[in-house]
Length: 120
Ligand SMILES: [Zn+2]
Image (cartoon, rainbow, N blue to C red; front, top):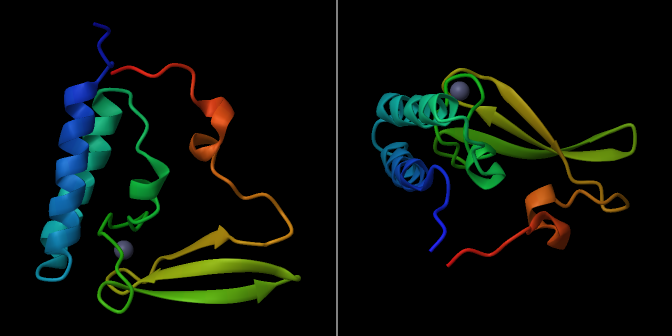
């Protein structure tokens, strides 16, 4: 059976993300701590954090963003382009993600050509 490289690290990142999300409602500082752990594990093991996890984190304080709890989500227009703007309520950092419907904003990992091999 083939092994997935960095499998136990991925499991740890998954667990820490869940704890971070749960803690962001009660203790945002602890949520940031777990977010920082996720980034340091990924860096140490040279792994990429899944975009779904990465986009839920504040890029500065690494707290998990939840609308009306630890952050604010707005849809903003700029030069006929639409963006989702997340503002962290702890450090006030903004993060813009494009959502224009005329362009293809599908993530690489969601595309069929991203799957090279399926390991059971
Ligand atoms: Zn922040």
